[in-house]
Amino acid sequence: MILAVCLKRVPDTNARPTVGPDGKSINPQGIEFVINPYDEFAIEEALRIRDKAGSGEVVGVTVDPDGNESVLRKALAMGVDRGILVKGGSTFDGAVTAEILAGVLKPLGAGLILFGKQAVDSDSCQVPGMVAEHLKIPRATVVTKLEIQGDKVVCRRQIEGSEEIVEMAMPCVVAAQKGLNEPRYPSLKGIMAAKKKPVETKGAPVVEPRIEILKMEPPPPRPPGRIVGRGKDAVPELVRLLRDEAKVL
Amino acid sequence: MAHSILVFVEQREGKVKRASLEALSEASRLGEASAVLVGSGVGALAADAGRAGARKVYVVDEPRFKLYAPEGYARAILLALQKSGATNLFLAATAMGKDLAPTVAAMAGSAVATDCTGLASEGDRIVARRPVYAGKMYVRVGFRKAPAICTLRPNVFPLARDGNASPAVEELKLTLGEGDLRTLVKEVAPTSAGKVELTEASIVVTAGRGLGSPEAFKIRDELAAVLGAAVGASRAVVDNGWRPHSEQVGQTGKTVSPNLYIAIAVSGAIQHLAGMSSSKVIVAINKDPDAPIFKVANYGIVGDAFEVVPALTEEFRKVLHH
Ligand SMILES: Cc1cc2nc3c(=O)[nH]c(=O)nc-3n(C[C@H](O)[C@H](O)[C@H](O)COP(=O)(O)OP(=O)(O)OC[C@H]3O[C@@H](n4cnc5c(N)ncnc54)[C@H](O)[C@@H]3O)c2cc1C
Ligand SMILES: Nc1ncnc2c1ncn2[C@@H]1O[C@H](COP(=O)(O)O)[C@@H](O)[C@H]1O
Image 1 (cartoon, chains in turn red, purple):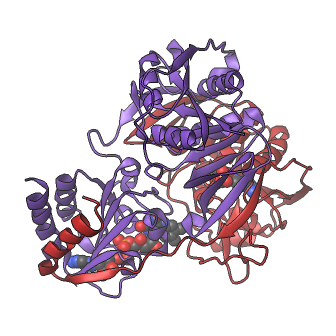
Image 2 (cartoon, rainbow over the protein chains, first blue to last red; image 1 turned 90 degrees about the horizontal axis):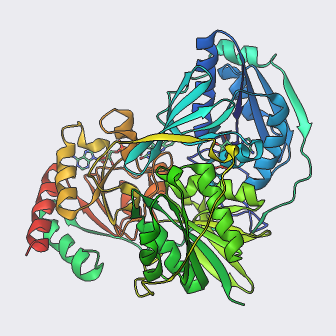
Image 3 (cartoon, helix red, strand yellow; image 1 turned 30 degrees about the vertical axis):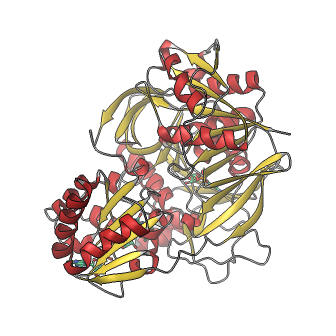
């Protein structure tokens, strides 16, 4: 079975981005880019399924406007077998990315297509569901447990205060939430091996944009806070402020 | 021209989600709002939608919709979009809303703006404001194709209750093909029965690694109980196995925006702030006066959590219960 994992290159979560000169995107200078953290759960799950089955191939796919393959190299170092790099797409327009990805995934014929539940740059939580709809296959998002039972996939997905148990026929889409597994670190051997693994580069088809970013701006600054006091003596004053000044009680 | 907005009124087990009524309230502020109810035996909930501002309620009642059925629900919404002629669709940014919106968008060939915190009418279109980079930036998004689909962050938009409790109701007949029920939800397994859900709570009490042990979370839970608050934890706590991931607040946990967020023994790492810095009022209790959490807190107490928190619980009990 082919297992596909979709990977996005995003700023490290420690980054403090600033608005770029176009006023619509961030300044990339000085920012370290990494694999989207949720996508690491997707990679780990695919590797475990392949290794447990003792056969199969894990294919990493990334759509990157700059044609940057660094996230694929890291995935290959973790144990992914080969990569597909599509130069194109858009950071914020998930519908465009989903259409491009669906076009690449369709001929690949993967039995399971794994995603992260959310890209931590666009925070849009939409590409997995859109891809599943384009491919007309079932999907489960925000998944914390995945089990293959014959030709079915059974997942647990997080919802408010409970979990949904979801059953799907393969091929299907699964979007990983934290808790699914503990992603491995690439070994030195893995890093060496990754250099020789194949990455196929493709151009992206022209896809009609669905949104436009009109403006990017930093969040409004929070009003300066204050230290009410030290130790438990400050407690009555804090409660008074919450009730009479902030009016949140 | 008035905007025509259809709102998906979400229900689980016959109970309407407050966040979807908030979305409906916002829709009726922006334009002509209608609602769609999807499920099995849900017609009676039309009154809730009416009070929150729906002039008309479309009902798609289907015995196979007892539990959430992603593709089927999306078809139902699409049908209501066609019937109503609405050019905008709002959903709550809940687990269901976030799961459903992209499917409807893919079916309709349009886009989703996720987790919107502001919506504005600009000429003949609606422009969405939403956080990106975990709230370190905001973008204003314009749509190039209808229907414009927005999910609205819970607890941000005020709830209206003064609408008409008997709106016009139209039952829609949905024909489902094989491919419309691909994903099967078999059951819903409770994980934190009876507790207040983090993302919907108006008060959240979170504690961090500074508490030192899982047993110490009792002081967090007692404070939360007095306030009727939901409980949260930092990632360090979750990674230590002290609390489940469902309680994690932050970039790789839940995003919350309650009226009051109390952070106990949490340092305030950037990834934690990402999940809570849009809270209306933030209180921090930390023994280190230089902890970064004090930079975002409206009010802070420098001190030992084991001394301050029980005293705070006691004080709230006195003030709130007479
Ligand atoms: C990719 C990535 C994603 C992440 N996602 C998240 C996320 O979603 N959520 C999240 O929270 N973190 C996240 N983190 C981790 C984050 O960087 C911090 O490590 C974490 O938030 C620290 O948790 P903490 O504040 O509980 O612990 P610490 O940083 O150890 O802080 C403990 C605090 O308690 C105080 N303290 C100690 N004892 C007492 C006492 N007796 N009384 C009062 N105060 C006391 C200390 O002064 C200190 O400020 C992420 C990190 C990465 C790399
Ligand atoms: N440009 C991209 N290339 C490959 N996969 C992507 C891309 N954008 C998003 N994804 C996948 O879709 C998931 C959810 O992203 P999003 O819907 O943008 O929040 C990510 O975790 C990735 O698995």
